[in-house]
Image 1: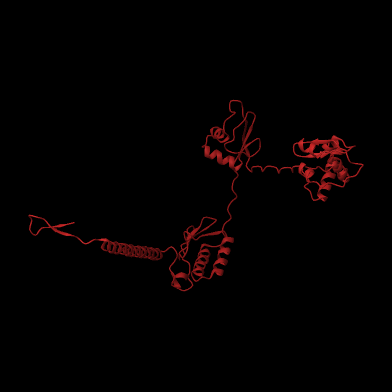
Image 2: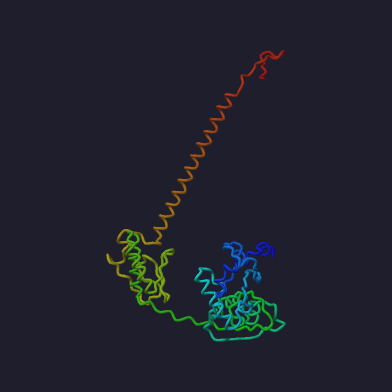
Length: 342
């Protein structure tokens, strides 16, 4: 009100300035009205003050002939006015206001079949979802919470949290767990998998990372997962093996041994003079190296500490000698030869 009163007759000039936007229904905010440039004064519009409609966030100047219903956008006329307003504001580079909220995507549906459904009664209102479902199913609360998290337990056909407080009238639906699809078998034989794993290990040892990456991609495409941390590999069908192991992996029915390219009973890494990853020799050597470095650091620390202690002792001794005063010798009467140090 204070701002409107202070403007006074300026609204008449503002109305003339907004004459071009009359049919477009442009809403003007308070800040825009205050900072709007003042048009040149004309005798025709001086003293005129159009009615003003106030809202919580915006202020719209209503010119003669306008009506509140057109501004509110009721019915077909309101829809047309809203479309025209958005188009005009887009041309001016202004924000187009509130857009209609897009329809939310439909919630995903669980793949399992419906096993149970019940409605919350007044006696059950106020309980938490996971606790109530665990009591009804006869499982632990963590298992029920996992079912809620997976979407197998829903409230009013929607996903919800495990600690949701239920209200009277809520419909709880439970679904069965979807059976996992059968895992495809690895097309490679165990001997071929072990051979490629050993070749990759040898390539990494000689820093041929291009070959190592190529073999890793080939094995991954065939469903073989290589675990460098444990120096092992695992196929989708359950077969397992160890890097550098000349024997076949776990799960192969036959007892054949992989044919090494250099000689019988040797691996490519052993032929190249490289100890297999994960072998006892490699572990022993690494442990000895760690102990050697640790002992070396301890010795260096003791030497530095002794040197620092020696420097401090020498400095303190020199300072004590400089500050020490000469002793005075006094002979005590009655005690020949006795001296008194002061």
